Length: 520
Image (cartoon, rainbow, N blue to C red; front, side, top):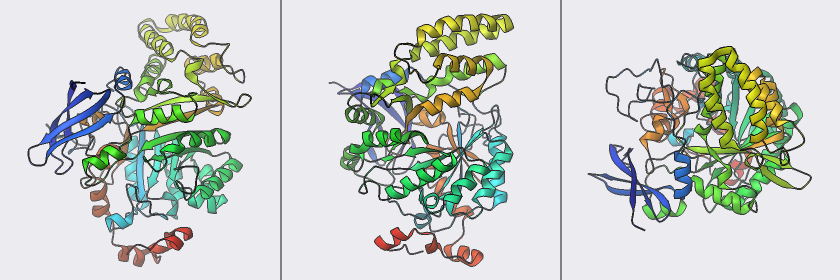
């Protein structure tokens, strides 16, 4: 098949990071990103491995409200080198990250960050973390509401509970703790403490269901058991690496389903490449979102397919409806449609099946219905609201197939109570009965699409007050993630002298038995 140019965009050179013009092309049923650096040559990278799914996702491209109070006030900022955020950014913060330490009790080879790679210890004091939280809450037009405490491994900080309480006091309504599950397995009381302090869910690394793919499987299981005892939800987060755990995708989903009383979902993250890598190796190891969908379909016997997933911005009509109903701006998840997607599945234990929501809900019709009535309510006020409720009762009967829908809960009632009464306790019932399966493919310098980073909704707070999109923070590490750690970190010797601790004492004992300790 002759290559066909779909659109033009901008990217970066993976060697010098210069901004380059790039083309998105379709060839042999796949989507590629092509770019040429005058100094470092031509690059052709797989963007999406299924052209049909690419085009379907592209229909959901939406621009958000942008940022009213950008930290970067340059007249002509250059994306992604002037991130902070700036006036070029098209989305508000959907999930805020605060990087509380680069210390960790493991040394996973694929990890974005640890002290051993940087050479300095980044352990910002509480007053610096407070400034980072304040910057996120000060964002306009919509302050950040959801927060992820991340690292490194946040549980190695002695003051973790203070950080969680501070975030709660600042007004964050959703707080998730990103962890490898080691400390929470060792110390059941830690699960109790983080739950009481304000954590809603553990976002736990979980790379497989065998010891080969996931050496910390037993610790993961223990953490799940400890969380079960205190009612703390868990989301499993597999880093997906071709040839390592791609054959366990279905088993990971089934493991989550078997523990769905406490495991709220699975969020797959295809691995991103850091550093120089030959094209042959990249092509061999690259995983894109359609690859994941293919594996899910194959490994669930066709129960879940790529067509069951919707891109992140597909839910924008829900936010638009909320804005029309309340008259207040709501968070709009206007991420780029090729950044990730999600679905919900009902776990039919009686028949031992996974049933995607698309099998009993006409999702497209539901979103179109909300979009249509958002405009009507904006114009018509209270009278139109009453008309909506009458129409919703009729329309939901067409949207929801009552014969195929689960009998355990009344989905129609839940939707009406959430939309009209703003009763989010009802939504909680939905989350307990349905399991989330999502994915997020973070970019690397090879497949970098600046149109994606402009719409990013997952942001990092910086100690200097800037707020930086994930794929700028890690995709251009030398400018953001690593520079931040070097600028605000301290040498291992300084840290050990100040704290009276040894960095090597962070390391998990099983790791120390099987590997050579790092030089620090």
